Image 1: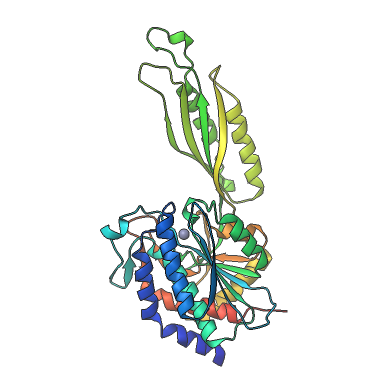
Image 2 (image 1 turned 90 degrees about the horizontal axis):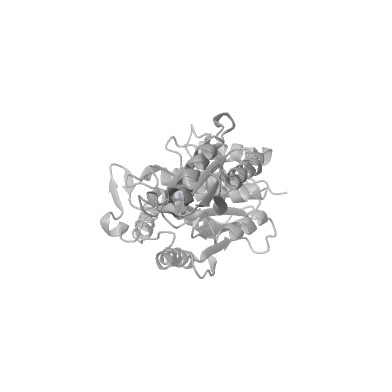
Length: 388
Ligand SMILES: [Zn+2]
């Protein structure tokens, strides 16, 4: 059952489907790989213009290396309630030039283009939901919008901003794409991305074999040992996904390096697994080798607390009223910024964005007809937020 205010908001959103697709086309057609500050900031500037056009106050937090963070706020004058936070990233995994090869396109009800689902459609949805409340009012608490710049590389510049804004919020909706099933994401694995270096000693492997120490021989042992920490029953996986080393075929390798991807479900497994990896790195099998380990990036897990379950149940009811009858929560092994807000203790739901699939590939698609109902579900969930 929806109230008159709710109907005004959902009707406002339904009437803006074409405007949402137009904005999506504009932002997809700007290259914005994570390391392309100019491109990422250009997408940010387009959203700033949107906020300005809709009378929404917005500001940016500068960063020298990565794109700036974009903030916006919609509130009733004098409200001192804690806000809800609508979050999303505008960087993509695609290189500069991708847009000219395959710009935004629509075929058979699906939109295509770099970052169309992951997650420019979610950002478009977030800003239109904010604009609906700016135009019509009725929100029980302030709405904060945060558009970050570097999620695809584990948010080196955005993480402290996300944690700060997450702590200040009563609930976080992260608009990563909805699962292909239409479900949202209520749990995510944590991920730690590491690099390790192994050092040996170069020698001619024909003439002087016995003075050599092979870093490649050692890294082979370490890879097997690291992989053996995988415990599928506990949801712990280890993958050495990159490896290189050596100097020439007839030299014992003075150096080898690899990169490790650790995923886990239970926050307690992070420290114990990292300690086990460190022991492997510190303990040579090939005498005379040394090694070091470095964490390069990290995402924290999304654990469904009772509070998070409560906002999911409320969101699910809102989604039902927006016509999404079968929407449920799903666990994903993939990581996202939602782990940072969940880990500071703020109830978080992820994957509330429009529905899409095949992220990070040229087959990435977005279900165009999911944009409006997902926006309506989010708006209804915000309207029904319980404030004390
Ligand atoms: Zn994403």
